[in-house]
Length: 183
Image (tube, rainbow, N blue to C red; front, side):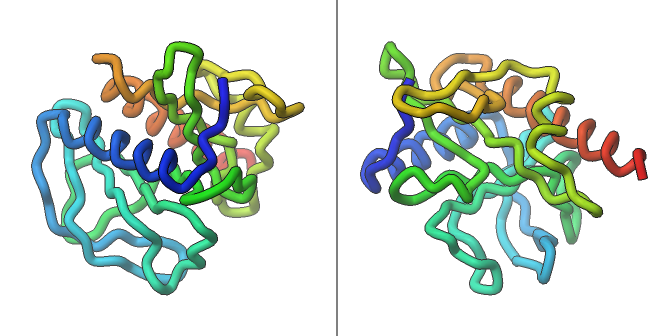
């Protein structure tokens, strides 16, 4: 597996990620996405059959851009305001270790979304905690990289994309709840 790094590859993968999500039976709903430091008015894509919502774009002006896409996801039908369960934010160029999301190309040319396991939780959550608690599939170090082990989100092509993404979002929620309940 290799990490996608050029701006063209990353934009194409981001477009494929959004297209795969939009291909699921969905509704477009207007809401306010709440994040640390503010709110962002947007139309989000809600997938009723999986009870998840997502947004694909760039970070709002108040959030540090850090050369990344902004892909927040949550659970439940969006009302006037939604809370983010997780963000899958790949870089827009290069291999940016500060971003949580990563696009990989598999040996058959398939595009895979993975996550480094960094999530914001009150009082913090080390990546090692997330990965040790994660019950999903892990992906070993991509070619030429010594670390890290990554949490697999989903393949963008196969028919299981939607269910795999929903499972990942629910697993992040479960692990965040575990961490919060420890304190």
